[in-house]
Image 1: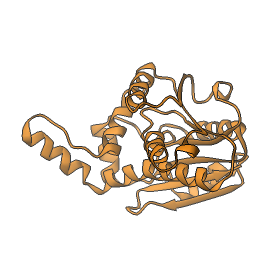
Image 2 (image 1 turned 90 degrees about the horizontal axis):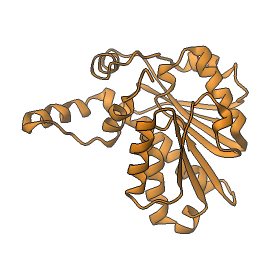
Image 3 (image 1 turned 120 degrees about the vertical axis):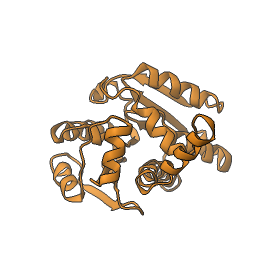
Image 4 (image 1 turned 90 degrees about the vertical axis):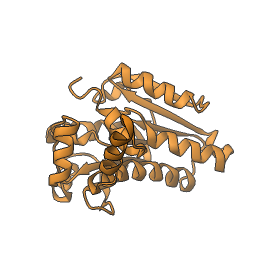
Length: 233
């Protein structure tokens, strides 16, 4: 698990809550979280959360099955569930959320995160994200933010193809990619100690041309450092 623990770094940015020792540490963390690179990083989970909400409110299903893979701490699923439980309990009751990750520590924290809100419709699976046999069948959505950055092209093609295989007709893959910029590269390399694969729209178009997906939407986030993706089956 080369990147084990990176899910905490990601969720710290997603949550946007500064922390640190004494007042100075908190001030430094607050300054870092306000940087454009962090704001752009945060936009990818917001994109995923909002796509979930849009899908379940506009696509008619008797039941919805939504997976995050690899899930880390699935803040996109959690916040979508919180919104739906409050706004539309009947719709919320027809949704099953799944998180899949190879890291048992991440799954333990994810279980604690969701059970702390009293959710009983979350299920977590310890498995390799490349193993489509481990995925729940007939999924409506697969979300995956921050995974593409760890993968070589051939492995990303393999992963997206596995996602396509488990989606039902009309299902959607929601993903993202990071565009190279100096500040993001510094943060990911020096603060998170991650080696990152950067991709722009042209590179992603080439990736998706080698998968079964046909209808692909791509757009930049408001900051411009993330490519936000929705691919339909």
